[in-house]
Image (cartoon, rainbow, N blue to C red; front, side, top):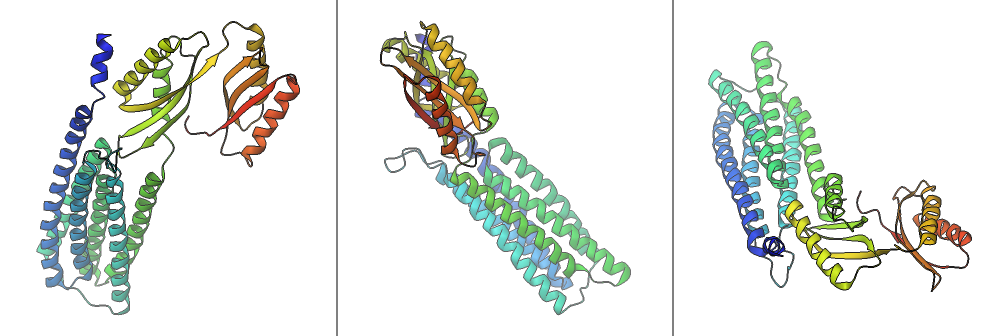
Length: 388
């Protein structure tokens, strides 16, 4: 009982707050590094762009300013997301990070469109740039700095599961490509007198626009609610079924309230001989174990009872399950229970989203089951394919 109490203490708000606080410090520190690096790069590039008359370098400087703004937005989003739950938002403010990631995606998209517009203007009304060796060296250094910064920020973002940092890192990597193309265009111009920077700027701008759209699409998808990661779902179910009397774990639903913040529910199958006391103790143990291993809070655990003293029920379950799974769109049958006294059979079926008509598949299984056991009343639920 002592171990259960110790584990129960891990579920309190202080424990969760300390984990989140450590993550927030890492994100903010990384963002500050990004702001400092981008402000310095923007200053250097702005001076070079004005001296050489290069529109590409000037737009690159503007891009660095937008990157600094992205890092600032990341900090603001992290601060908002780190606020403790309150009466109006009992699940916390974690989704604010997704909103900041969306703003960054919009900034990337805006930078791409602006860069494309300026490049087209330059193609229509070309202006001959004047490069110097010092200018080219500084641009080359900027390329290296942006590559290193992009990899660093994205790596930290993936490590702490921050969509905003990942987007900022991708943005920095795209900027390094822009700077590199500017450098290549400058070298080609110096060697051959052929000015290609406007055309290269237009091509790179299209790539940036696509990157911004992809970032926006991914962030919106997270806000709408995505399918649970397969590995996480299987790991949680494995933990739940590791308890001796749990014969199956189904209908796992996880609601995401920010990066690494999940609340959810699951159904389990247990023997029909279990008492209320047995269930109470088992459910508490499962809740604690899942939190300790996966940092997921199960706010509810539903229970299916299994026939343990009825051979006829076992035979009926096997026959109906075989029939149901013969349908290519039926992924699972669970929660089966046969009551001979009341002449009822109940179970749930999970129908794939690939089915042209999920309700039609459900009715097909129900009708065939009734034909197999016409003397029984059926209570069949159509389950959603929430997780693997």
